[in-house]
Length: 437
Image 1 (cartoon, rainbow, N blue to C red):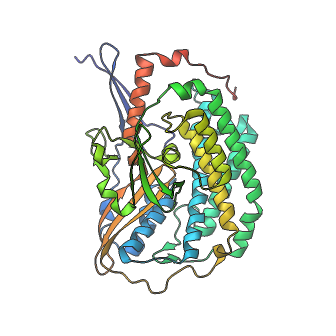
Image 2: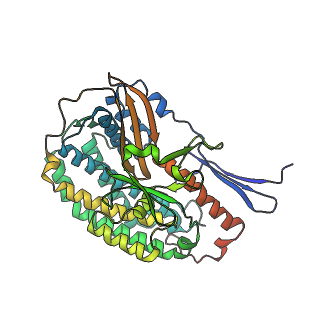
Image 3: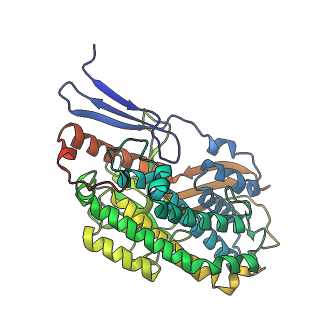
């Protein structure tokens, strides 16, 4: 009979996908292992083979129902790179508006629906109280704020992409339809209110972090490498170079997406179908990195917009750089929401955003291979396609945002498990009174 005690949590809820958590304890109560198990298979890399490349951006986005926009855009950028196509500047601006709209709505959903319930009700509250429905009932102003921002973002995605979920308008060479002046005017009229909503969200996020400061600075503080995209040092989500930061805060790599195979490693664990992506030159597991909001804020020298820059400076003044506190991902998330809103306002005021010069007319399929890279809300996303001379996809490699984080998730979970089962750290934490009774 085994002396091992196994704690299994399945399914793990409040995440974008399906997974399970396995904790193994020895007879002495010490944590032997923690696994984040991804037990579903997807096969996207295989069933995209044999497709006409121009169809792939409408298929690959089905990888995720929460963030199809980044997959849609990474996919079309990969096809364009394989065929040597450069879309018109106006089309790129509309695509930037599209990805920032999704950044806003996805971060709003994550913060309010997935994270906030545990903070506002308290981590030890009845699960019946720790959910977004209870937030809306108990804190209607907060619930209204969340719904307003998510509605704005998703409506803007629908106006540009043809559909609010799984957009269809990004095509090799640009966009299949322009962004109308009526839509531009409608969303521009609401942008001042939107800015106020996101500032309120930032204030709420800072209050949550402050209230839970003891937990933020003690639980799951795990040094790792970090990966994210930047443009001349500024945090960037549509196009730019990929930067890697070491646990000590040193920039150890700064490369164009087409060079990713020199720096990106993939490890296949026995306990999961999902690969663990890591910084290749450091090896596995030493090179485990994290992507997502905090990683991008760590690797970037600055934000692109002024209000977001102020918010970044405040976070760094409290936690330094790099920040290893896992709970600080929530703070970084609302900082990125601020930048998304500022970029949305800037793009809506650009005359090119309603241009009809948004699609090349001479795009021809050809043999080649190309890489498309964007930042999904959860992290760096790379699509790499090979096509034959008829434009049919012959091979696909996908570095999905979630895989960039899984090994880091396990490191965080292992740290917390040891703090709970061995050190009993949670028993001495100073926690605030819940906002939801």
